[in-house]
Amino acid sequence: MRKLLNTLFVLSEDSYLALEGETVLILCGEEKRGQFPLHTLQSILSFSYKGASPALMGACGARGIDLAFLSPRGRFLARVSGEDRGNVLLRKTQYRVSDDENQSCRLARSFIFGKLYNCRWSLERTVRDYPLRVDAEALKRACTSLKETLAPVLETEDMEMLRGLEGKAATAYFSVFNELILNQKETFSFTARTRRPPLDPLNALLSFAYSLLAGDCAAAAESAGLDAYVGFLHRDRPGRASLALDLMEELRGVLADRFVVGLINQKTITGRHFTKSENGAVLLNDEGRKLFLTAWQNRKREELTHPYIKEKMPWGLVPYLQALLLARYLRGDLDGYPPCLWK
Image (cartoon, rainbow, N blue to C red; front, side, top):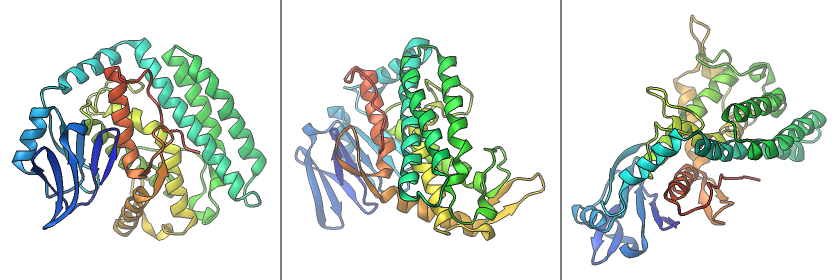
């Protein structure tokens, strides 16, 4: 269990939530694992299949406390939403902001700033940790390019210019991505980003990591009462979870990319874990997917100190916290959306 920003995160998949007086009770069998006053909570996120008692769901609804259920792996299942706070009002605000290009650009700047900031420090960390095994000068040049792009990103009020700055920074970042690969270069050398379909093992890993991260971000948005299909940087497109793509931008380099590089450098994934189809697509085989998913779940359990709230939390909760911060910004509780800036 973890309580952040008046949100209770129930992480144990064998936990059952019940009502006792004016408190929520966390049970594992007959064992009491925690107890929290309802009046101190704004929302509850349960990553457990066991669920909650009807009495607790009714109490949350009556008190305006959002109660969201997700699978232990983070897939959104359902939500009990009280009428006092009104997620309808939150979503209507989200739609209005999305339709306003100036307000959308303000949020998009934060997403892109977080992405470039984190990518820069990911490269800086590589130079620091492996100065004799990488082209340090090339990495430093890319870091400088990313750093110089940060100020223009925060200053621009034009969405197309913002996308141009992002594209320029992405080119600098991926131009040195191959330097991050320290082992198995004969199998995982990087030349260019390819997708739909990925044409080499490294791109296959990146695409799989991005799809999992997007799923986590979509579940996070829904659990916070937001519409995962209405974004600000990524515009509306049928069937695309645009807000999930927005939220994942700041986490691509620091979470997905570093995770993939770690799988390769630690030789968790090797060339034998891929298959190639007739159309040239390279994909993970069954054994590779199992290894990948196991490592992904372990990665999400690793902790960081969140730069905004200054508390330790698992990486797997970061998308949920960022979605809550975005919801607070849209409600007017925050002056700006704070991206997760890792260092």
